[in-house]
Image (cartoon, rainbow, N blue to C red; front, side, top):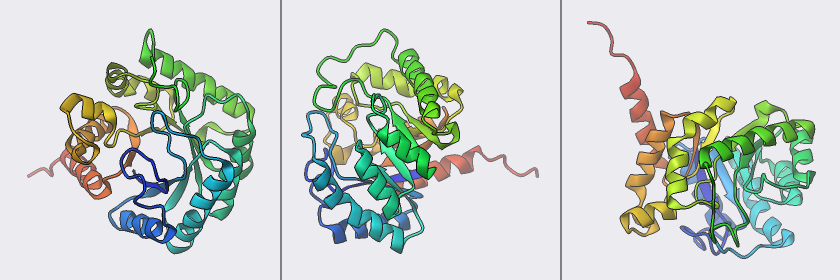
Length: 265
């Protein structure tokens, strides 16, 4: 499944400022649905490295009108990309079905309780540190083993708060408190994470590790983004969070066609 990224922020790393206007954001969401997106992830707070936190009132102002409009005008599944329980509740009330939480390492349980109460989907993402600190000096002894262990422990904690395992997707958090080598190791190690029995959501689209490998700006990272998606599709990933919806849908569908057995002649 392909999840289209819809950032209603002024400062996201790739498309910041393009869809701050609610009407433009809704039009972009509808366009991604037409391109084949099965989910739309609406975010009102940038979580790029060094991003400044946004208060709840401003995040609500950015996100809720877009979620409500898309819910009323499309049949797509809407996800809200937020760390705040209040924003999650409001978005679920407005028509969202999934909470995409980069801060699954949280100690408070208010957001989890909101997910439990509504039966919504929940994306648990791994992040070392915070958006302000995560890329300062990330360290792991074994990044695949440690991220897998984190998810195993999170699934138990979530269940203790009433969130059923079948509600949960796992996102290894590419670029969130990881070096270039950590990111590559996690992508190569998705098969290990998949042994936990939950769907994996992968977000690699246009990310900076691709830029470091190839010396390219975000708008020129499509080829490597597609390569990562195709690799990951064969290693347990089932949901792909992307900027370039049409191209990703086409690449994944072509992979499915090639994997089909040819008819006997």
